[in-house]
Every structure is written in C-alpha cells, then in structure tokens.
Amino acid sequence: MSTIDVTEDTFEQTVTQDGIVFVDAWAEWCGPCKQFAPTYEKASEKHDDVVFAKLDTEAHQQLASALEIQAIPTLMAFRDGIMVFRNAGALPPAAFDDLIQQVKGLDMDDVRRQIAEQNASEQ
Image (cartoon, rainbow, N blue to C red):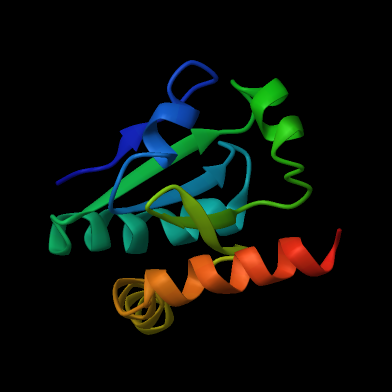
C-alpha cells in the first residue's frame, strides 16, 4: 500500500479508524523530510496492514497548527484511534522498522487502562 495524503477534511477520519495509522508531517522545503520520504514510502509498501499518511504542513497550516507541530518532519503513530507515538525528526530505516513493530506489538487493553488511570488521577 502506498502513502495517502491527509487534509483538514480527512485527518480525523483517517487517524480514528481501527488499526495502525502513521502520519508524516512534512514540507517541500525541508531537507530532513526529503531524506525520510524514501524510508516512509518503502515501509508503506512493506506493511500493507498499516496506513501511511502524509500531511503537507505548508498546504494545511491550520491542521499543522492544531496538531501543535513545531518541527518537521514530525512522525505520529495512532492505533485504534489513540496516539501512541509522536516525535520530531527523521528516523533511519532500521529505527522506523523497529517502531512499526513496537506499535504492532502494543497491548491496546493495557494502553486504554493506562489512559483511564491517568485521566482519573488528573481529576
């Protein structure tokens, strides 16, 4: 599966679906973004059970602002509608493959329990 583009209209629907969704926030002028792009594209072809989305931060500045993206590339991972990873900076291929495997291996019942406990302690 190749990458898909997300916009203000499609972002929420894309990241809240069941399964794993990675979002690469990038810009045309960004050198590290261009370096990471082939790694991201290759991973999208290798993992057809994962959605790989790209967010052009220049074309969709309001969405980038709403997501509080301050550095690019910023990589986000969602699993079953929950953001489980967010980090600025390009990853080397081996590190990105490792991240994909970690997200696939998450115990989502445990993640939901941890979120519920954190929310309860904040009240």
